[in-house]
Length: 165
Image (cartoon, rainbow, N blue to C red; front, side, top):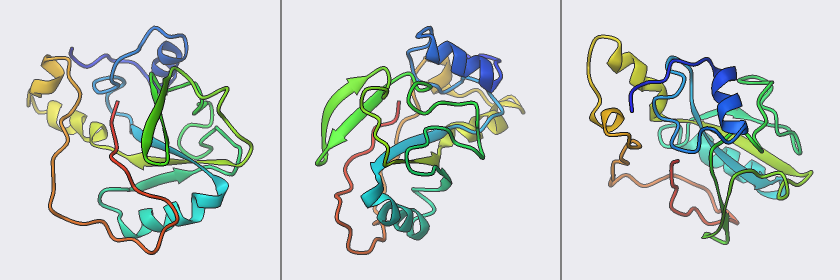
């Protein structure tokens, strides 16, 4: 797969309509991409603190108001319940469901966090002619293990493995 030259509205339309089901790497180059974390409002402040203490692994781009699935700063026309090709739902640190949308799961107190991701930097590498092997192979970016520990205060929730899609 090579880069698909779409704008963000076109990319979201493909995803929302079910026409794009794979990883979003290479989709809409030149635009910021984000990871999505959705939590009940009771955990929102603690997760925001985690992001503030760990801006490297959890760079917070935007936090939505409780119950609002629209990121008003980054993409007000987006609907975070439908505009990703795949949602992995975790409860108590365990993957319990994979879904095409969050419409039936969305709650009025949910707060969404958009975190920066490496896909946004790929265009800067491709522009001068650097070929990225994972794009040519149609694969997602590989995670890089680290020995650095995250910094956090006493949290009521457990950080579990993050899967990118």
